[in-house]
Length: 272
Image (cartoon, rainbow, N blue to C red; front, side, top):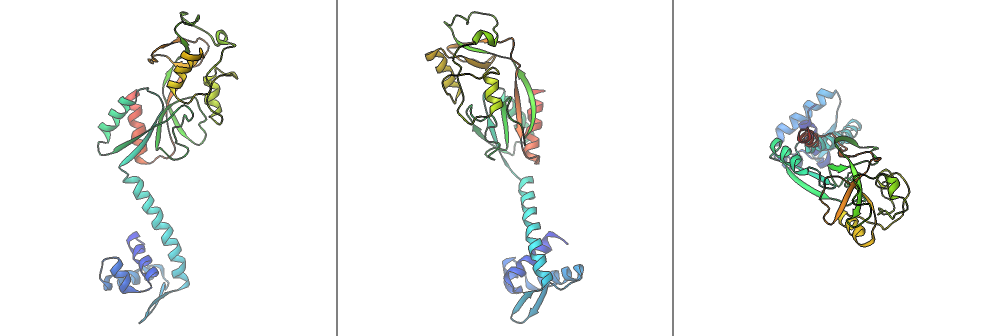
């Protein structure tokens, strides 16, 4: 039972006429009739009642029509996944995306890459809402239902105004920041993500959504918060924290289709 023969049968079953079905399939009627007859012989049952006015479906024909539609729909979805020529990548932060892009272009130069930037409220970059195929992001966050791989671990520090009394210290601990306002993410943000960037404790402070809002909050209000070390944040400074676990650079995805898998492999190669 070939997919092509099932497509022939669905056309006849929907048109209820061999001539119209042949026209729809852009073929002549005799080979179409032979293909349907061969299908009936193969299944050992009559699928169509033929008459000069057209055809009607038997009970077996109605059953096969439902199943054939489902099979063909599934086959079309598989084909679409295998032949997909675009991939949408979600990005959160600047942590080596350029070298991942270069590695993927070398591997799959035929693929068009769409980029979706995101703010600090969604560490999955739209992965859970199917807005992206794969996310190059930062953790920790709720990984339930996702496939993830850690690419790198980055130590973090306290973000401070340069004239802050603590800004000249070589190292700090979260206890040194007790009683200070910390920038917060909006209600509904991933709890694991929010808790990590709060230093593991409940905090109070202004609500922010983007990195620049965090920086401005520090500059204007003396707010504190956390950021990975090694990033240029302009007018503020980042002092290493001794008692914070590192933040992982993570690649996350949901479907193991060939194109997404190729992107994951390129990311592994880029960070290897």
